[in-house]
Structure formats: structure tokens, C-alpha cells
Length: 607
Image 1: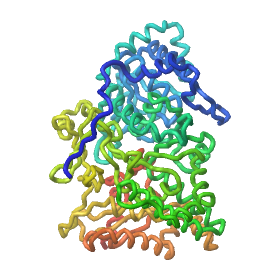
Image 2 (image 1 turned 120 degrees about the vertical axis):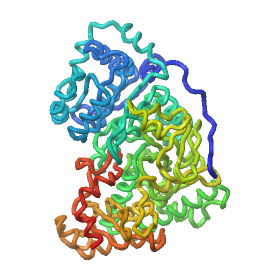
Image 3 (image 1 turned 45 degrees about the vertical axis):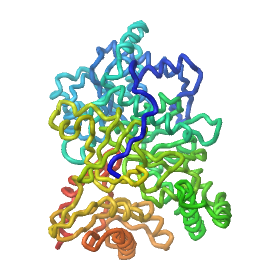
Image 4 (image 1 turned 180 degrees about the vertical axis):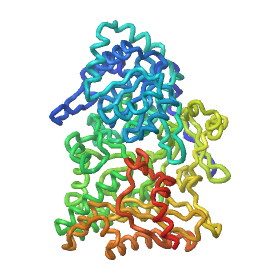
């Protein structure tokens, strides 16, 4: 199949902007709990829709008092915190445009984004961010204001705007139309300099209202629940912003968690107890691996692995029934599944707060077997696909017919087209307006309303999309063999000891790989064997660890021909990190940066 369309749920919005939902909801039901917010003691406190409206209004007045006007651009450099959402909606209330900055960006990256978007003010989280801005401020003549959250920025702005009448703010809000620009989100720059994606209020309204309208039934863990989600994705990334806007517009209680690491995230999931989460595959991998390690420490690895096998078979049987390919789980399989419910599956769900029954995954590909395990364990994960340029999700698996290993059907109102060279093209009201100030780059990806994504994919007979790689990432060996690295990397990374894998081999005689290890899993693996922890320099030379990684590579090579297989690999002492500029905020590999940083190691693979 070359093209598939899903009809829209509703017409695109004709009036208003994103901030209207804050005021409309407060008018309808001011006492509804809209957000959760941590206090200074780390305890979750409830924020009603009426309270949130009042805080947005007060901050909007402060922004006006500090000279922010309709159409101005204001940068936000902060981790995922309540205050980011507060600033977003206050800026949209006065018709200003927010410009997210990645909290880990270097001074030169920050300078480029601030200069390119011509921001007039910036909100930062703490002193380190302020110093980063300060180091380039002399080259930013349009920057007039810098507010620091941890130095009382919100309180200062609210005090400054206390004298402004409510009606002044509402005049600004009523001037916002769906075509008004809401935000400039910079691409994460996996290839070259980041480009500013111009996204309108209409783009966000269509995207989020479609997602809520189609997937709203799965936001609750059971009928009658108040839906809630814990947002831990970076708000500098379009996926996190989509979740933020969808939660506010869809009346889903939302909390914020600033650290995308399992050690910090899992306790907050247990405390906040969301009914639905949206995450990248890394989070689900961490939950699974933590549960498996815990079982092994308790001497119950055998039962856990059996439970995982049963979960996968059970989920596959459900999938076959959904597509008319089978009767569903057999009586014997149902008995086995029920046996492991309390022993294993309930404990896995408890690690995510205990109430999660549904989740959405995006940002990168998820292993089919991992998705099937969670389905069998009572948590259905709807994998989706999208880009900054499509205002997040363009496809997603539907609730009633999830096909694991694919990124689902086009979301309502979207058409997916596969070009002659296999490139995925998208059409819909969520497609962005273009790159800020860069008509040449815009013309390269927008063709009569169609977005050429740069991703390669295929549609099956039912319209489900599978992403097979990126055009720019296809490796061509010196022998002329074209290899898509994504599938190989994903399979190697499925090994519990492996953190990351990058496949190399462009213009080389064969394919090779650099592999990093998951320190927590390695420490556990060594402890089970009664061995002491190893420093990183010794880990990379340990023959038993090398054998485990070799097993992962052999498993990956079963997916491809000999000419496409990984011939050799090297284990690195330290994982790739966002802080060192080797990962994007959504944890994607920055291939060129990694190959440059590890040029010596790559060269050694071919000696």
C-alpha cells in the first residue's frame, strides 16, 4: 500500500487560541483539580482549574508590565516543571510566542536559537542557565529581560503586573486566532544546525484535540477514574509540549517531573499514581529491566522469565484475535496468565504507580517483544510516530487494534504516503508552517502541503506504518551495500546489559558497532555472579561482558543478510549523553557527533 488516510474527527478550529481553554475550564468547573504541583517539602499539592487560571492571569499581567507584547518571542530554558506550563499559557494569553531552549544546550547553541528567533526576553531555571545566557548576551541586542525561576521570577512578575486590569489581558487573548504563531520549536539537530519550526495555535489545537478525542477512553485505568498523567518528557521537545497542551485542553490532571531517569522517576510515579503515561521506549525498558533484576535478586529469575514468555504469548493471541487471525488465548494460556498476575504482572504495574493500564510511546522505535510483554502484563502501550514538523504524533496505534512492531495508523485527519524511494510523506492540519526565516529549507520538506519527513517506511495492507530508518542515516559500505542501522541497533539494545548501540560502516568494507553498557544492570549482573564491581576501564575488557554483548550482536545479525551484519564491535567505557552533545533531548543518537567524538575507536574497528 502506498497511501492511507483516516478521516478527521472534527473540523479545524476557526476562532481562539490555546489559552482560552484555561479560562473556559475555570468558568465551567473552577474546583476541578487540573494539576498536581510539588511543594518545597516534595509533597504533591492539588491545583484547581480556578487557581491555575488566576496564576496564568497574574503572570500574564506581569509579562505585559515587563514589556512583552503580542507577537513577541520569549525563550524558556528550564527542565520539566510546573512553572514552564504556567509561562506557556501566560505567554499564549497575551499573544506572545514561546521559544523552548534545551536545558543542556551549550552557549553557542543557545546563542544561535536566541539570535535566530529574535527573542526579547528569556526565562531560565537557575543560575547556571543564567550564566549561559549571560555569556552571549552582548551579542543579542534585542534581549531586554532575563528572569530566573529559582530567584523568584514568578513572584516578581506577578507583583509588577498587579496594577493592570484583567480586561487588558483579555483584549490580548481575544486577538489570538488559530493562525497565530504559538511557538518556535528548534529541531534537536541530529544533522547540522537546529532549525526553528513555526507551529501555530491551530497546529496544536488540531493535534491535541484529535489525540484526546481518539484516545480519551484509555486515559483512565477504569471507568469513573479521574484521568491523570505525570509529564516527565522534556518540554523543550515537541512530544512533551503536546502532552502539556493535550492535558490542559483535555481536562487531564497533570504533574511535572524534571528528571528523565528511572531512579528519580519511579518514586514520583508511585506518589502521583497516574492513570496514563506518555514516554519514550527507554522508560519502558528501564521498568522491565528493574523488575527482572529484582526477581533475580530474590532468586525468582526463572519464574519471571516464564511469566514474560507467557505475557508475550498471551498478548500475541489477543493481537491475532483483534485482527481476525485467531480465537484468542487458549484455556491453558489463560490459566498460566492468571497464575502470574499477582506474582509478576501486578508488581510491574505497581512500579509505574499501580493505576497505569495504558501508555503511549514515541520518540524512537520500541521492540515488538517489549510491547507485547507490557500488554500481557496489563499495560497496553500505543506506539506512535511523528516529528517536530508534524506537531508530534502523525500516526499511532488505535486502542481497539494495536499492532505491535508498527507505529500504527494515521491519526484522524492525516494521510500517510510512501514515496517511490520509500520516504514517508505526511498531510494534515498538524503539519507546521515552515522553518523560521529559512525558505530554502522549508521548500525542501514542504510540497503543496505535504511534509517529506526524511524517514523511510512501509504501509501494510491495513494502513499500519512501520518505520525502517532515515534516508540520511542509510550506510553504504565500500562494496555498495546499503544498510539501515535502526533495526540492528534496536535489537542489540534489547540485551539488558546494553545501554546504547550505534552502527557504523559508511564507505567502509563492512558494518561495525560501538556499544555502551547499562551500569546499573552490569553491577547487578556482577553481584549475581559474586564478583566485585568493575571500574569502566576494566568493564570494556572483561571477557564475560564481551561475550554477553557478542550474544546481542549475533541476535541482531539474524535479522539481516551477511553483507549487512555487524562484523565487529567495541565496548565503550561511558554511555553517550545529552550533556556531551551526543544525544538529543528525546535520547536519539547524534550520529555525526558520536562518530567525531569516537573517531579513534571507529578507526580501530577497521584495523
